[in-house]
Amino acid sequence: MRAKLNDPSTIQPVGWGHRNGYAIRFAPNNHPLAGQLLVGEDGADERGARPSNGAPEVLSVDQQNADGTPVYHGWPDRYGFLPSSQAVFNPIGGRSDDLCVPSPDATNPPSFCTPASLANILQFEVPIADVLAFPPATIVAPISPR
Image (tube, rainbow, N blue to C red; front, top):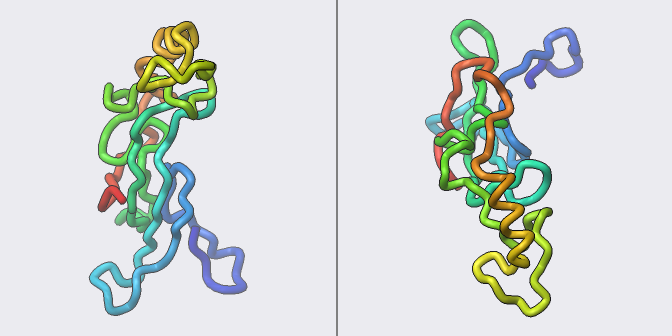
């Protein structure tokens, strides 16, 4: 969002479609991206209702499109430069997967889940399904994985 100070009537969206954007700042005035909003965001992980493996952390630039609409970065169906349905993001039943029941004797690497819970994870969580039927806007890729 952006706005003029002390004027709530000027609030405008600048970018959306981020997952957990937290490292937010404007580029310095002496930088080629001066005045643009930089957003660092955490990649998805193997927790929750939609676990994934290896989603990158990225750095994106938020700026309004030429028509004044905010740029869209693709969340929840895009992780960085790739669709979330790519096999590289399939959950593997890692220790932080909410569906993982840890093996009491720490066997079954690399997941360390019991064979039954790993079978459950792989049966129901692969591949990661899209949430949206289609992107609501053109997807703008990040400028860099972090």
